[in-house]
Length: 218
Image (tube, rainbow, N blue to C red; front, side, top):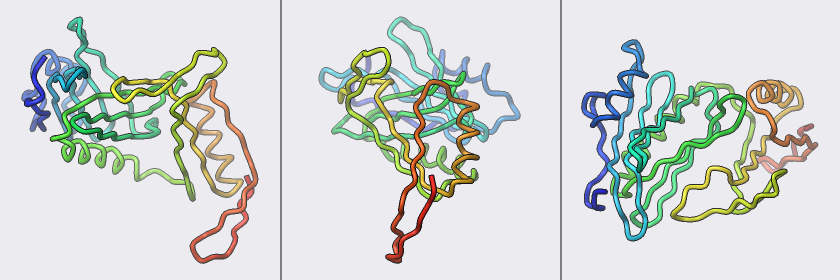
């Protein structure tokens, strides 16, 4: 493990990343795909917290997160922007974390990596690149993401948050407000890519900035 004095760095090309990350990137990304952002973060220790070495790669088609495990393996999470649901950035003292929620094989999943917060600006830029890539898609009139610190589902297994531990299965509620027609179109898309999640529909009364009330059927 490196010390906390070794920071993440933006790479100009895949060849600038260390092995074995470099070989995996070469295997997974064809020459026709344009790499827009590439960040390598060495493993580091901050107090009792140990972060794994990682690579965040953003292309014109998708993003990839590569993590170097303690046993020497490299795990890879990736998704195109159409199936990317949510991007989170958490900063606590020297500890930074990026979490990307996405859909794979009709299930919601989470990719997470940690970094030294000295490089917060670099990761903020990378997150903005992901959001910009998603931004061309059609949006709802309004949406809010609520992340729960504690929860359990049909398995009755309690899932809890921990500041210095990555939890991939905390409860998340996404509230979307729009017309009934657009909500139904959106549900048709969601049902194609996600299984096992609870979806509820409600009629709401939304207050806009002008002070008038807008009825939006759910």
